[in-house]
Each structure stands twice: as structure tokens, then as C-alpha cells.
Image (cartoon, rainbow, N blue to C red; front, side, top):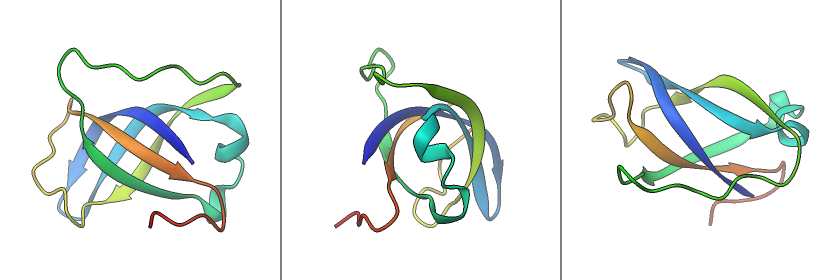
Length: 87
């Protein structure tokens, strides 16, 4: 599991788009990726950078419990490997 600093780029009634530097190896599992938004980042908060190749891309996320996110909000996203669980 990775913790990624992502930015909300688009909001719709059913979800969001998040831009981030995703781990390249994780990104290649397109069909089996699983993500969970943990929380908003504080204005001056940063996460350590990943120590492996990354790709800057946008992903779509359902807005199940984050209806109040707005474009420009920064969040921590947990990115799970296939078979990993958020529990």
C-alpha cells in the first residue's frame, strides 16, 4: 500500500478526478487498482516522495463519503495492491 498526495481536479455528482504522481508499477495494474481517500492534507503538509518511478496521471474516484471536496483540495490517497485490503 502507498500513501499518495493527490489534488482534486474535477468534481461531479458521482465522483472526482484526482491528479497525482502514482507509483508506475501500481499504475500498470489498471483493472485491479483500489484506492481510498483518507483525509484532506493541511495547507503546509507534505508527504515524503516515493523512492521508485512514478507517472503523473489523473484517476476517477467515487465520492461515497467525500461529497464536500472541491477542485484544488489536496488529499491523502491510499493506493492498494491487488489483494490488499483497507482494513
